[in-house]
Length: 293
Ligand code: NAP
Image 1 (tube, rainbow, N blue to C red):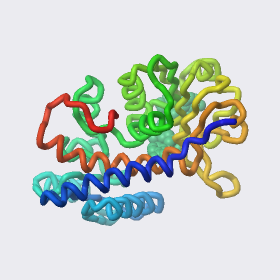
Image 2 (cartoon, rainbow, N blue to C red):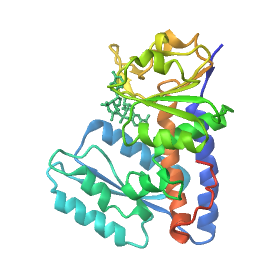
Image 3 (cartoon, protein in one colour):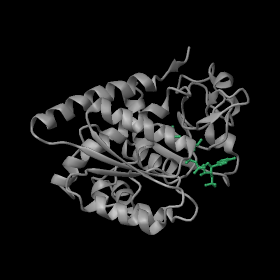
Image 4 (tube, rainbow, N blue to C red):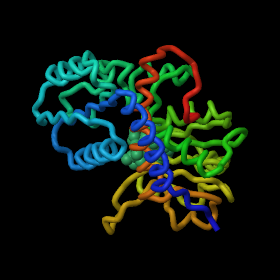
């Protein structure tokens, strides 16, 4: 019987723990503030931004919402980011992606101060991760590490195969698994014999962006499968990159969609907001984080 990794429960546990930390900070007179900038009204982005605000409310983080119109210029957005960089009372800045086509996303990410880069997308954050130094870590992959650890799944020495090499999921995922002493393989659209490579994975992480693409032919008997994808299927039901029903009797553990990786991303964003305090107080330190992420 496969073990279903309960991302909803694990993310709730993390949020409860973080709420206690925020309460303690507040008692010491420290208020944590996250600024969320949204440009335009993309429906998926509205849902994500709404969920982030709700999580902030639950934990006790103050959230500031900046809603720019679809027509806002790159200059306006950069001006706002720079102003938030300067503000002492703002700990984290999040610009909801994707941005409208006329705005250079990379430039916006690079403009966010690395001290406030709670999404972990700034080149400095990515660089720190790659050389094992302290910095913000991208929330989806750090959430996956928490899912594995809190489900008692050992990473050290395991064959970890990642399908997908995006900057926000696949690449940081590889660095985090390496940090946990996994043996890491990254696959992408030019990988030859994908099925054979995927089948090496004791832990298979799928971030390919194609609904139900991965079936049992890609899975090693007894593998742990983490499904990052989020899609709507032909019946308008949420599904992942993995064909859950096809693989379920072949895996030892798997994340469902919904209720797997998704809720972890927001929990780890909240974690990063709180960690911003420690990063600011002690920049450049290699001190271990409280959650070993
Ligand atoms: P992405 O930027 O579209 O990257 C997809 C990756 O998959 C690319 O590296 C691509 O290879 C690779 N790929 C595509 N087709 C392939 C194939 N046939 N064989 C092998 N590799 C293939 O996607 P992403 O941003 O990483 O997101 C992946 C999925 O996760 C999406 O469904 C997204 O919605 C979801 N997601 C969920 C969360 C969450 O919180 N749960 C967070 C982020 C993303 P190339 O590099 O060669 O093109």
